[in-house]
Structure formats: structure tokens, C-alpha cells
Length: 288
Image (tube, rainbow, N blue to C red; front, top):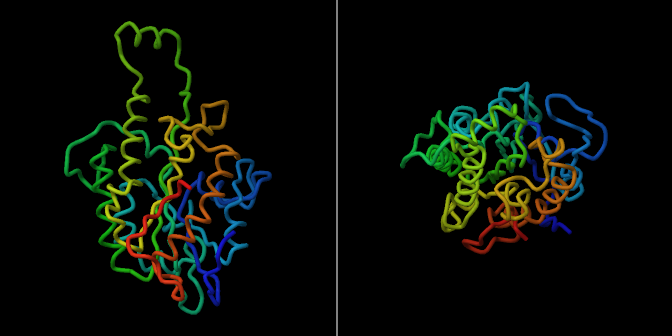
């Protein structure tokens, strides 16, 4: 059960997402919604309802808005650098809150194509990419921290990109035989291993947020939950008979159940609950 932190009014959360995030938030039901902002969906995890029942006010930006478009890893640094004021004021899509209100919490998530890593790359990496390497991705997330520290009154939550489905689109037999003859390995397998490596850095206590700093940034490990808590490099909860990387209803339900207690801890640690100051350097993890 969520603690309401003795707040006098709900904390405002903006989720910036595409299809997987919209399905995680949605209630279970038919596909109802536009621009990946769903009221109900067959893969619905019910996260929006859980949050609203526990004193959080949920707002969304997705396809069709300046804030919600472009959510790949290399899009985040310029988005937060150039549009932070619009992000903090966002009510829905590009509409602003009335009376000058701003969001207390910003949740941002890239989608599963951002786990199609091409190589390890070279340090220190390039925050602008464009090649999706582990080191370039590290550089992009590292560049975000300076922007987030400018707004200590706001909690920023990175949701790790969901893993890839275990099955790829079936290729013609002659192509599969040719690859086998030439001794070529499946690039999806190598890319998935790199994705696992990157996710461990992004969510680990010795990685992106080493020593738990800054206090107003946290990582919700969606990837870890969907890989069976790291037991696979691929999704344990795919759809489309294992070919579709969109998480299933079961996977989204598990993630929604883990998100609320994670969020409550992150809120306390960030000091958004002014009556219950957080313990210093308390590690925030979704794996509970």
C-alpha cells in the first residue's frame, strides 16, 4: 500500500512515452486511445489507475506532440536542454497546466528499438550518437544529469527500455542456410547482450547514478523485470507468439505492481515529501 506522505494535494507526474509506456499505464480492455495514450489496451498494466488511487495525478505526452515525439536515447539531451520549461508545464501532449502549475515528477522512457545495440563503441562516446553503441548511450544519459541538477525540486525518473522479443522475423530458408554455412552469428544475440550490459550500467549502483547521486534522479528497471530479473537477454513477456517486443499484460502488470513502491521511495529520497526527509544516499531500486 502506498504512503501518501501527508501531502495536501496530489503530486503531478508527466510520463513521456510511446506505445509500451502507454500500454503500461492503460487499464486492461480493448484498444482505446489515440497517439499511444490509451485508456484501455489488451496489454494494459493498470499503472495509471494505481497511481491515481494513491495520490498521484497522471499526465502524458506521446506521439503527436512536440514533447512526446522523439524519445530515442539520443533525443533526450536536446529535448531536456531545449524544452525543459515546456516539459515541466505540460498537462497533456503540448497543452500546459493552468495557473502556472508545474509537474513534480517527470518520467521518461525510450522504446525497445533502443536495445538494438550495434557495438560496444569507444569511450567516452558521443551524446549525439548517431550510432547506437554502449558508449554513445552512456554519454547521452550522462549529459542529462547536468540538466536535471538544475531543477532539484523535480524528480526525474528514467524507465529502462523494454527488452527485445526472443524471436526474430523468420527469414527465408536459403538466407538462414547461407549464414550458417558462412559461420555468421545472429546479430540480435550480440545486440541483446550489449543491451543487458548497458542496462546494468544504467540501473546499477555503480553506474549512471553512482553513489546514488543526484538525489532527484532515479531509475525504474522495466528491462530487468521483463527479462525475468536478468535471467535472460530477451523478454520473458513478449507478445505476438514471441515475435513482438511489446510487453504482454502479465509483464506490464508485474511492472505496475513494482512501480508504485519504487516511486514512493524515490519521492521520499528526493525530498518531495517535506514532512518525511529521506535518508541520505538511500539506493532506489525497482527490484523488490
